[in-house]
Image 1 (cartoon, helix red, strand yellow):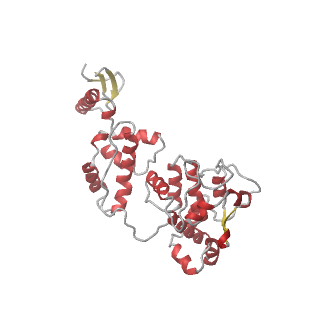
Image 2 (cartoon, one colour):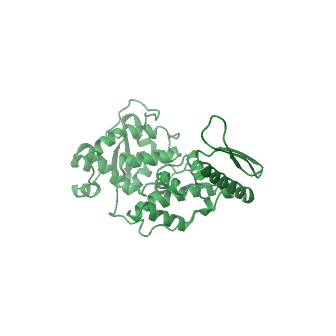
Image 3 (cartoon, rainbow, N blue to C red):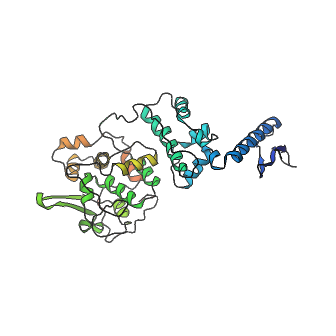
Length: 349
């Protein structure tokens, strides 16, 4: 029977009741206006008739997709204003024109990278997620022109951005890798070549050695890094492994081995993409913010000159030191007297 509106005794809001396509309906219209309640009932009836005709999956809304995405651990960042504008749209109707129009409406004065980060990336993440459920096709949006241009060659991440990346991934090994790289600042290849036999969690230290070249580099393991590494199950061979539990194939003289991993973490968190080199810049910037000691930074970063320190260390707000401590980044050696369990209150390890 068609939907109708009614009022239950003692209530001020109209109720929508009836059935469509064999589905019983009883919802509050959340309005005291009879006219608005009738319009709400007609809209609900149209949606249910379309869903009945086309099938349940083909008529899922973007709001439903967001709920499914968040239930599976997706990041809610930037989704609220998007949901307000297109939440009622069917997933398969969210196309290039919809996003381009929404970009002009929500972010008329923003840079291409900001629009990409706050609109195109989160919408793509949601639709990519539910495409595996058959709700829509996998998205292939054209991004804003110039979205991947950087104002400088490299960037540094804030403690908040790192925390969002850690919270957005369910892979414990990936979280340990990010904690390690941002907390110790190694070159990408150095980090991937470190062996467990040269990692001393109880002393807060890791050593990278190249015997033929007589190179020895020591890395300080601060408490947060120790806590993260102690969650890893293996204790032999390479410290950092890929998602298949195998050592990374490190290219001689090259980098970029971890680019896909970092990009995936950044996309899930809804932040600008970064590289292993960016994480080294991040570590240097954090180190200087904590100690204000360029000579100590030169020593800990294994640089040959202060010119290199200046190249890696970026200008940062005065509040960065307090923010680092807030998130548990001490930038100093952890001496535990024994291996920890990986538990740190309020911190993603």
